Amino acid sequence: MVTDTIHRFDERAADYNRFRPSYPVEMISFFTSELGLNPGDVLVDVGAGTGKLTHLLLENGNQVYAVEPNDQMRAIADALLFHYEGYRSIPGTAESTNIPDNTADFVFTAQAFHWFDVERIREEFRRILKGKSLVVLIWNVRNTHDSVFLKEYDIILRTFSSEYAARERNKIEHNKIERVYGPQGYETAYFPHSQTLSEEGLIGRVVSNTYTPSPGDGNFKELLAAVRALYDEFQENGKVQIDYTTNVIYGAV
View 1 (spheres, rainbow, N blue to C red):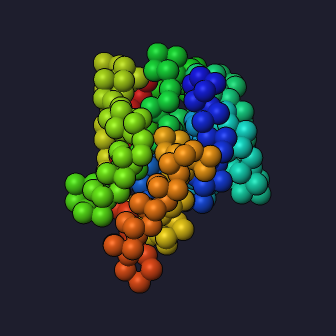
View 2: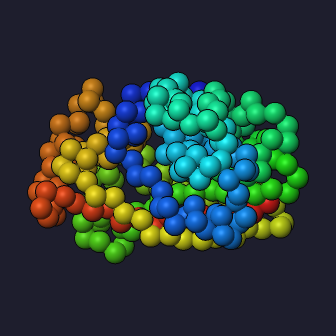
């Protein structure tokens, strides 16, 4: 992570927390039944943000070191999760987690891997893991091809962000993933997920992205108008639904 990346979320942390989706509970069941995750295991959530994945792991009974470099994001997580006995809030980056050697049974990172320096995180993750423990990468990916609504949503993002296309194209870069896991390789799993939003929620979901215009930008009003028109066209009973596939990649490093 570089400083510019870290501070991109300074003004978006609250919207990120309110309007970004969490992750399916079926995924946690998969971790316990197929990957051997036990309630007593010590976990590290790297790039934990406002604690969406951390929360699910804490609910599973785990001790979780939530590593997050952005002060605003971490402060929200602290306010929401401080009452969990197993919660540990750590200011740190993926490349320098500030976690002691041989601490973690698993390392998780959700919706954040694309920000990381691949060569440095492999060394860092191997340092903090106990032996051949697993690294798990997670993304919610919109099912754009299956939905006219999400195709129109995607067009809005492309219209108002020159950065969006490159960001989405590079989000799950398999050559980078292969470099993390090395010759032993990795495995994948997929889970359906969805998010139901009001008009406010749909607007918040759009503006939580660091690549969309912010209120101080000249085309912000045009962005809002486009999102409201999209909502009006596709809402049913005051709601729209974003369908995702939650992608999970896992293996030893």
